[in-house]
Image (cartoon, rainbow, N blue to C red; front, side, top):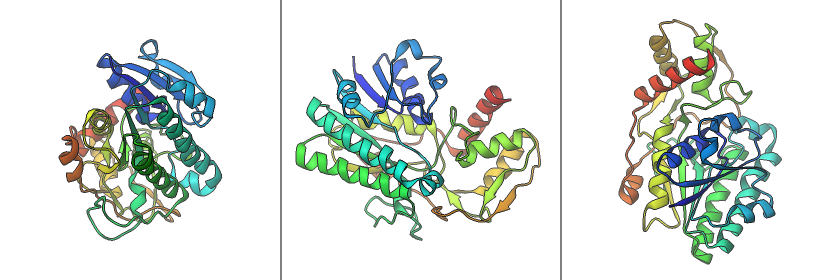
Length: 312
């Protein structure tokens, strides 16, 4: 039986990964301080995981959590660009310091593979599309910088200490269990929640900014492939759908899906936001056979269905 530690396992991405791993009969240990995660995200599988409510950045927690573990899936972070602008020190603590502590513990515990949740925000606002892993990184926010530092540490721990690491640069992940109510809620859950209630969603900028929105099932699949692949050590890999959609298009699609015609409210663009993002995902396919299992439009329909069932 494979034995996994999932940091941030009560969060949006982490809980979906835990759900998949338990369905495959894996042992899953979760560490989450519930700062942004919710234990309720694991309600349907809580009896199938070992749950530790604690700060993953505490050395004693990190070391005890690694006991008898094969693979670490490090999803824990403060995952918000606006939050990082408001409180960069907290972002550094929960992203950089915690990642370093976990890498040290993983090295000393003889962990077989350390999969790191990196971010496409590392690319910044470079006009070059699609984004390739070899491109120059230009982080525009404390969050982007913090996640990039984590990548560097993962690479160094492989090169210097032989710890098998791989960094997955996620592009705008969305889907079930993503919180639409937070002050720093991501775009799609916030838009869906507003439109379902007949309220105008807030768009920062003119709505023509585009993103490579990635349904959660694709990210879950990528983590499991990366955890089990060979010859991927020290790599940085894009994980996305490989298609760009504008914010205005998304709002139109949501309206069509739910049979409404709710118009957005446009406000000034936020500091740290990039204008366009689109991933080249050929390296992920080459290294471990990654291909999107759900398209953007199908994923959006699934997400809307989940929010209708769980929020309304």
